[in-house]
Length: 330
Figure 1 (tube, rainbow, N blue to C red):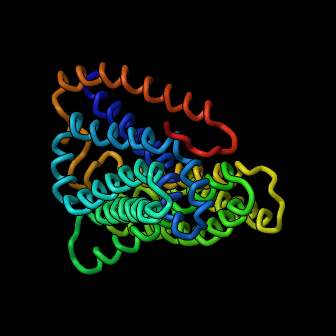
Figure 2 (cartoon, rainbow, N blue to C red; figure 1 turned 60 degrees about the vertical axis):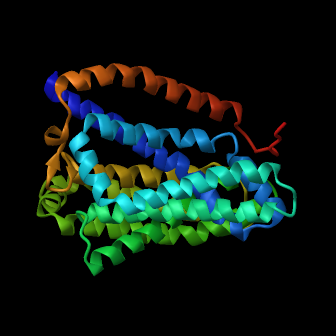
């Protein structure tokens, strides 16, 4: 049982981070797209994420919390190496949280300021997360090439979040905003594809072990469905967006489902590449794990907390299903 505890916590942490990337990804994406909309459309965009955005960030707290308590050694290495982008991400998340609450209650003349703050906070948080991903993949190198790669991945992750956000708006908004969201999604789709391709190429390049995991025979053929399915989802998403651009608005959920599928497959591929390491070729989950007694104690709390979070997440999305309505605060 003790040997399985790190695997259990790795699975829980991976689940939390994947759900965070998808759920907070779309509302960060909506924030990134905010500056390209009219004032009326901005209100509709904020209304589409209003019931969900703060709860979505719960998954980040859960994922980082599990990293801290279950893998304290890895937490120290990763957070120390990524101190500045983590600080930037927190500033961005705080800024968008403050802006969200103030813009709803602000007078009309002050609302543009809070709209800009919400956009800036969303963009800063997304850029910081992308930069952290680029640095993590390259083993926290600090040379010029590594920093340029991390900056490029930061831009691509912003595009990925914008894709999720635009597809969310296609599903939740109405009228002209849907048409604008289709155009946003079409632009973001290809930069997202380039970013995923860059990560897929860079990861085996950094580590001979990862190269061997992907390109040895027969493993190569067993893993082939991952890139093939990813390509098919990109093609399906592009096809649905093209039809919507021509005025065929059937299946509004399809682009969002395709975008989520793309992120899930990309996450699965990266997780396979890294396993069993938390820091590439330096620190495995067993090296970094806390004492078995501590893990058993923490597992009890996790098994109580996680179903509660999953339950209220499902409930909130069920209650607020369908097209969004205007937000009202007493």
